[in-house]
Length: 313
Image (cartoon, rainbow, N blue to C red):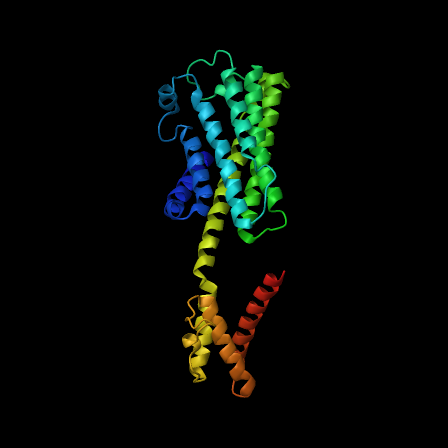
């Protein structure tokens, strides 16, 4: 069930981000991430049976390799999208790292002897082969490395929407470590076949839950950026200040112009022009201002002061 929820979440973000990805280059990392993740999840066989998909690739379990390649690419671009939003730089930024991972997958997968026909439990069925163990372990630790790198990247720049992404990354890493433990125990026979069978799916729930939270975090980042671009907060502030202007029977500062004689277009600029107008009037007529209006003006002044303080740093 958790895998189907993950598929639905990724599909929703992929569809919602498609229009902006076409228009804005900076949003394409998120779209590429969800696209690659969508392909990886489709290979699980929820829409089209895995056997049918693998048969189209030759029936030698190449579907497993496709799933892991797309999963890694998805995590790579999710981390890139996070870096674009937070402005932070990441350590594993060279494409050589990604290409090295994908190359290692291909070499080790093709080195697996007797891959046989399509199997939904391909890794578990071939875990005794050293090439299979190395392949699966490098894949899962590569995913963990990308998730850890993303968390490290934003450790000092956490915002509300980033917390969801980081939480998802941490949970996904725990799932990766659980999977790596299972692979090692199953390959080396620790605890016997019964132990390996009992713990085969230990990583499924935390890994996909973490992925869902990562996708939700990225969706929150996109929504936050969209809201910021609309300047909804400044629109509301401007409307409140404008109502005070009207009550005070002042000349509306919406007609004010900047230094170049052009009218103010951004809600933030209009709010600032209105605030200056009201502050000047408040100095001249301190006894005529309402207490409620004074609080609105003070909050707007504090908001602009914080912006100037940030800009000065």
